Length: 80
Length: 189
Ligand SMILES: [Fe+2]
Ligand SMILES: [Fe+2]
Image 1 (spheres, helix red, strand yellow):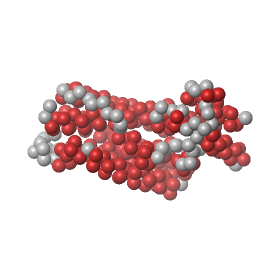
Image 2 (image 1 turned 60 degrees about the vertical axis):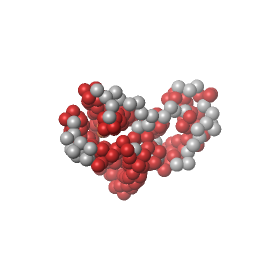
Image 3 (image 1 turned 90 degrees about the vertical axis):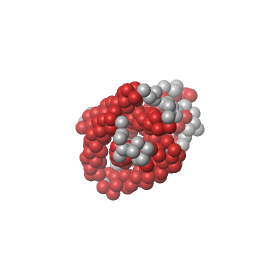
Image 4 (image 1 turned 45 degrees about the horizontal axis):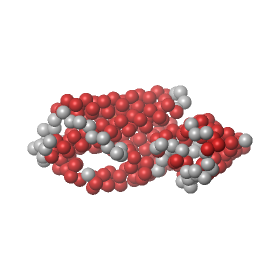
């Protein structure tokens, strides 16, 4: 359920219907500018009670990669 | 409009737009922050930047300059060169570096001989707030140093300092003609 929850949050923030958020889409295509991307990342961290760092996102381009990263962080938090 | 006035109009437009961009950025960050002392300071910071843009708008209006619509804000270059900050510590590290650059730039501007009193008063009023911005962010970064470790916070600041230096040099090169009067300080002498 976790990856779907994450996508639902992306949809809620961007107001794009979740079924239209393609896994291969670039995360920068979901937002209108970099400020909105920062805002989205802050809200996702708050919502899932995780912490991201700049380095975590170095390789993240697509929605699927972002969802994976957040999923891993949630799992790590739960097992910590 | 003569050359100097055109340069003055351009740089005031740049300051104005940079303050607007700062306000918009901190509005978003303040809206996301959970309640607490950082939220309070961030909200004040956002309100200040918004007022600064108003002071420049007012000053330009008094001087009869129409603000130029700029395509990019100075801050955009930070995100390109330094990468996107993704947590509040990184945002504050970037802002710490940026605010110091702003203060330095305004200090440079104040050195122009016979500076127009409207511009002088505007800068003086803004710099008071900018100093507080550096202060509260430094204090906040100290608390984040306890969480992330001093080393990590310092590394982040150094990372953005390196980006800042290259951005500023590039900016000076790109707008050399427009900035000459600020840096050569002879035009009004
Ligand atoms: Fe400002
Ligand atoms: Fe500021």
